[in-house]
Every structure is written in C-alpha cells, then in structure tokens.
Length: 327
Image (cartoon, rainbow, N blue to C red):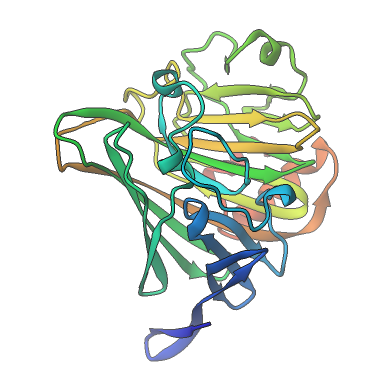
C-alpha cells in the first residue's frame, strides 16, 4: 500500500490535504483511493477505471452491484453490470449492444498528478478512440472529471462523449426543463413504455424524476448546466457545459435519465457532449464537476425538493439562477 499526502496552499495557509493510495476495495486489488478530509473517491483500474465511490462522511450516491464485487473478466463481447461511473461513446444506435468491452471494462493505467490522477483507458479499435480522464478532488465534497476522447485510428471518427453514472435508489433526480424544447412533450421518450411511465413529470420549469422500479428512459435537449440527485439528506450535483444549437446524439439530447427495474434498482444520470468529428490524432474534451452536500432536512416527498434547492444554491452547490424554480 502507498499513501501520498499532497498539501494544497493558498496565501501561505494550509487549506486541505489530499491522500492518494492503493488498496483492496471490495475484492478489487490495487484500487486507487483519493481522500480529502471526509470526502472519498474510489477508482477501480481492473474494471475500466470506474468510479465506484464518491462519498461524503461515508454516504455514497453511486450504485454498486454486490454480485460483481471483486470480479474481473477477460475481454469478451459480454456486458458486466458493475455499477459506478463510466464513459461510453454515443450514439448507441451506431454500435448497438453490448458496449465495446475495451471501453467498458478494459484495464486502465493510473498516474498520479497534483491533487488527483490521470486515467489512461484501454484503446478501442472498433470505435477508433481511447479515453483519458483527469480526476481531481478540488475541495471537500467537490470533484472534477475531465474526459478527453482521442482518435487513435487512421481515419476520421465522429462520436459524442457519453457519461453514464449509476446511482442508488429510491431517489429523486431533478434538472431544468427546456422552455423551447424541440420535443413537443418537453421530453424525448426512448420507447412507448417510457412515455406511459409515471416516473417523470415537468413541473414549475423542472423535470422531476422519481424512481418507482420501472424500466424506462427519457432525454432532453437541455441548455442548462446541472442535474441534481436527492436521496434522504444526501444531495449529489453534476455541473457541466452545454452548447445550444450543437449537434447532439439521440435526436438532440444533452442529458438523459435511465431507470432500471426493481430487480437491480438503480437509476442512471447521463450527460452527453455534442457530436464531434476528429481527424487522426485529434482529441476533444468535456468536463463535469461533482458536488456532495448533506442537507439540513431529508427529502422524503416531492414537496421537499424546493427547500433542498434553496439550501444548495445558498451553499454554492447549485448556480444562483436555480432559485427561479423555487421562488
């Protein structure tokens, strides 16, 4: 085991300490652990460099599949549902199912850099790309993930970077609705079953998703830059850039939510970049910032959401313009 403390100074004063070490995490040896105060982030190189934990005071919103703890499989065209956060290429309609195993669970290399790590993903000859991620703990309860997609082939490729983060349920997921959406109903429904589901609604300018154990998926051509996860007193926020008017996958979706059935009760918060064309050797990047916050009052029903949003705005976790949805 190695433990490397990294001191961060500002104006001559010690602000925080980042510790980076390797340890066995739930059966996966040589997992990379980043810690700053009571915030912990865990990357497992043996299963594609997934982030399997991002926790504050031990509370982790990221879903894990206990049936897969410690398991590492040979590369084959079979999907293994570990849970966690991973990066795929979109649109899925081009490659079907399952995802390229090299991108999904091929072993990665991890390099320490500053207050975080650089993760070199396995190359995908099928897609002609590889992902390189820079993951840092900026401060307590806050991480930054930068994903670079590089064309490693000898011809042009056109893909979107697709963030897939599986989170634990029951929960609410909330994000701004799009006032001038291209979708007549305000959401893009991936199938008729999703259209008929009661898990999603648009209310007071917000898309509100309440997990009810039904399988379904919706998307939105959002020009806003945040998604919010709420489970009891734990809030997890993703903030990211959007590019209105850009060409996005899935009929123009920049954010998507997938809900799985109650047999494996998880929800996916998904963020997509615009589609980009890369010449050989070129690369493109997208970033996200993740925030964790412990709310003063737990969110138990939909009516608790406005007070949670107000608290998160005042804490600097959500942008100030989020107040317009609750005033």
